[in-house]
Length: 234
View 1 (cartoon, rainbow, N blue to C red):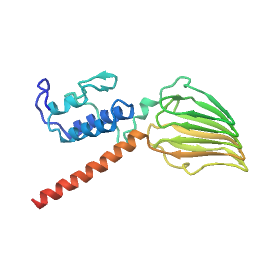
View 2: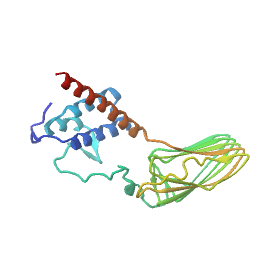
View 3: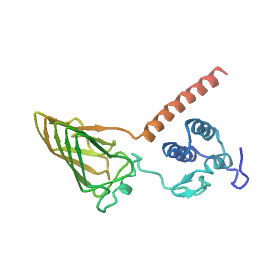
């Protein structure tokens, strides 16, 4: 699989990783199913030239622009943590500033903008505030959670600093993620409020795309080890 419109130059590991990142995004967005993703990913890591890389993402969008996704213009490398946090501090008022669950539930997840202050109430119900893919109105945001015979779960991505200041009576606030230093440029999430016969939990989780990327890295490491073993046997 070659492309005569792209010079037959040797591709680098960084070039292959750029293509793999586009494939991961397409999988997470539902543009590719798992079988197509694995087939294209295998072709990506086997590609040796730009001509072999270009067709792999030709029908997939990259940063809002239709392919060719592979460019001979080198882009600046991401920071050492790969988080891209400066681009996620967007200002503004936020997508939603409050939520209520009375004998029911609520969710805030996916691509949304966390306001400077978000207030929520869970009464005999539960709520989930997922910040893994969220943008942020400011570098420091506050979640004011009130849980009465109910619960609120807050999910943050790696790199975010968490400060817990809530009060619990026959209930409690989860402090296990407090004290973990944030990475440069990442937001600070302050959790306040009140829990009575209820609780506010805090979890730190990777996004689905990041989990998939780590699985692919481990898979590639196994393939590299097998390839090295075959070369030694030869």
